[in-house]
Length: 311
Image 1 (cartoon, rainbow, N blue to C red):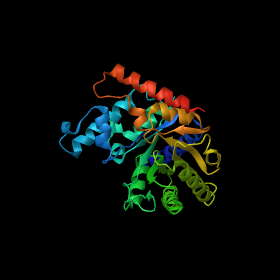
Image 2 (cartoon, rainbow, N blue to C red; image 1 turned 180 degrees about the vertical axis):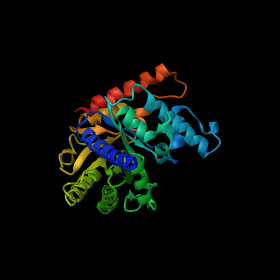
Image 3 (cartoon, helix red, strand yellow; image 1 turned 135 degrees about the vertical axis):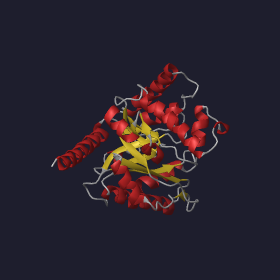
Image 4 (cartoon, helix red, strand yellow; image 1 turned 90 degrees about the vertical axis):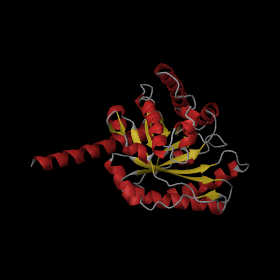
């Protein structure tokens, strides 16, 4: 009897948490922190933090160092639910502990920050002006594991390098095909077709992308909600139709290589769009800083991004 009662309460707690997380992402103020650097991007993230490649011997040491950096960010008093709605984690971060508990559990139960998981496995070679996602052979198993760890949603990135209609449509089609699998697994996908910021046809590519996204959004079940993570656009309020679409839970913006100042400026020009920054969030953080210096630098970045996300 007591075993059944425990299972009942555990399931009820998960349902209540999902509802609470959904409402927080839908209506909350703040932004989503991207702390999801994977194997390929981790060395650069560590270098920017002040740890060079000669300071670790192998991949295991590298991943431990990046986890230490993320733990320092997440446990900082500056990293709080007042400005942070959610955090995107790398799979190894999800599987590791923060203050003795699994990372996603710590984020939600200790900080009321909604946990997401990066699920893509890198990019294919360029074709038709875009880089599609590699296959995700263990997708079903990964989504099951994510649910068990208390993850609310997922994130997957592909890249647009040209204003090629065929390529952009292929990107969006792939994103929504995988997005449907994620929705059916009970998780909420962040659809991320990134437009490279320095291409000469950026505005054209954004126009093609928006049209393609609207077509795909109009095809999904009206009860299903996704997030869109998009490059900060060339035109003010360019994503207005996406922000207001009934199947879009939230439109979030990636910094994409823009400086924090430029990213925040562009963010302020787009009503209803909030940030989901990675490099711009951590650009003032360094391993040599003492706790006071680190927390102050993090607080200043978070405050600036949260303010820009309020427009």
